[in-house]
Length: 171
Image 1 (spheres, one colour):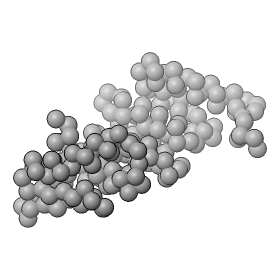
Image 2: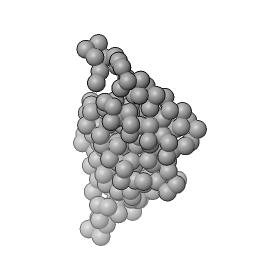
Image 3: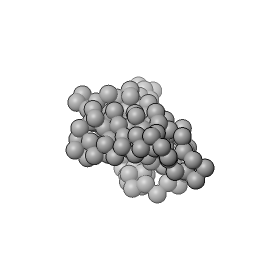
């Protein structure tokens, strides 16, 4: 466990440092299985931080095939560690959109970022383009006001609308 000054001492501190260093190196070398093992060891030894959980999420998502549920679980753990940080929400939105095909949840995470006035480039582009998207998608009306709202025609479900909206941004 960490000391009062935040430092690690003894065998646990050495093991933690080795786990994090090995995991970071493995992630950089695209050895995702080894990275996952290192980050999970680091969490076990007490490195329960946003950064560690986000890297673990990235490693799970980068496997072939990706392990979307574990990537999402790790991203959510990052969010739980510090709900004031924007990066975990952006990671959740990306996972919902790209791996889980759940655009409605992706939009909910983006909405929370928007409500925070988060200085996230992806969010700025999303908000700036939202009016053009609504015009380009038949049966979908989007208001970029506060809050961000999406309404559909009676024949379009919310999930279909979300997929259309996310699909527009993937062009």
